[in-house]
Length: 112
Image (cartoon, rainbow, N blue to C red):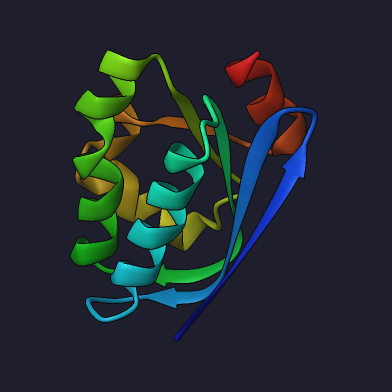
């Protein structure tokens, strides 16, 4: 079960993920990112501080946006991951393809 909150700060869209992202809840993640893009945000921060688990379907959502974000000059940074979630990204090499910051301050600098 996932709960997603969106907040806007200084022209940046912050998407907070709370709970677990599996195959069924990955659709909500996709909708939140699509809404952010649709509203014209070019700086997106994804707060993973309360993310307990992410499945391959959830990881696939992030992967599906890589090319579009490059083409449209949209910067997305994930931050605040627990060791467990960070290991999932690392094992699959996604930490090489996605921008990941340790905390919100670092993430904001990465999209600046």
